[in-house]
Length: 150
Image 1 (cartoon, rainbow, N blue to C red):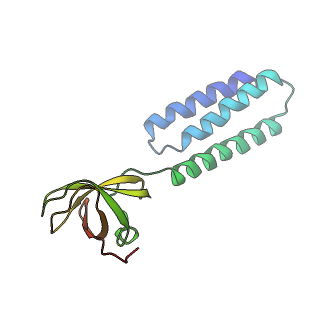
Image 2: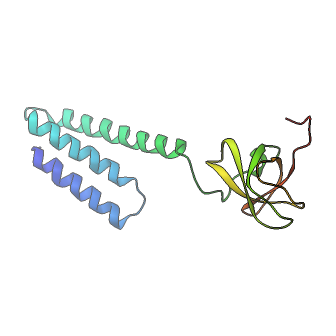
Image 3: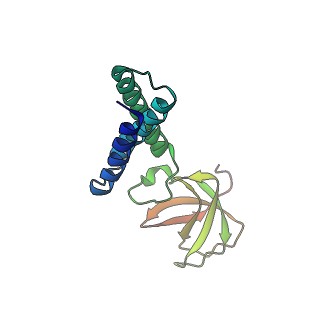
């Protein structure tokens, strides 16, 4: 196959991604474009070598994409486990009035966010240490951290 055959196939696969929104076919198109580029500079590659490069490049692109996607920080909290947050200690950024919304900041990001909206049953001033006691919808329910608790 000539180099431009791979480029046309790669563009076709990338365009097919528009019709099939799986965000998977695009990586095989990118692999074909890469083989087209390699075949442009190395025109004496056999078909078996070209197919091998395409297969390896496509699988490498797919693997890299899913690896980045899985380890990327997700800003959404929908469907996340609240068990990871209950018991965590944070610092109030803004004062929290009873049953009014405030903000709590954690030393390390929790489920992709350093600051979370919070509510409390009692008035808590800004700058106080609080403990997460529950997750209610998209808010954290917090209470003052008692002395002696870490």
